[in-house]
Length: 154
Image (tube, rainbow, N blue to C red; front, side):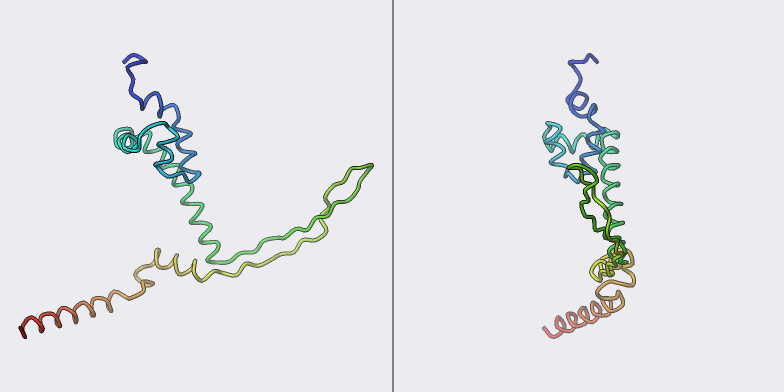
């Protein structure tokens, strides 16, 4: 295939696969990435199906962000410590100042209950759903019996 007979994928997308990965990692949604590539969103979806390298670049970029968010959520759920550093300007010569660390304080961020609930409901739904499965099944059974009884009374 000659250079000018190649499709738009080969001219507009393939040379930018590393950019596509970066855009996905930066949190851009598919529609924004399509716009950055100069292609229609319908074409974008078509390329994802037809070109494994393209869909892999998107997947790889999004995985990185997903891991970062997951780690941040876990950190927030468990709580953490950090150092707060106070610095003040100190003159070291004629008109020359530098920042000097004057105090380092270790601070504690308490575990976040909302983050814990979100984590547990998604990671351990068998134990942390709002209604345990047995209760839901029992309620559904009672509802079915009630409906059957109403139908028989008609």
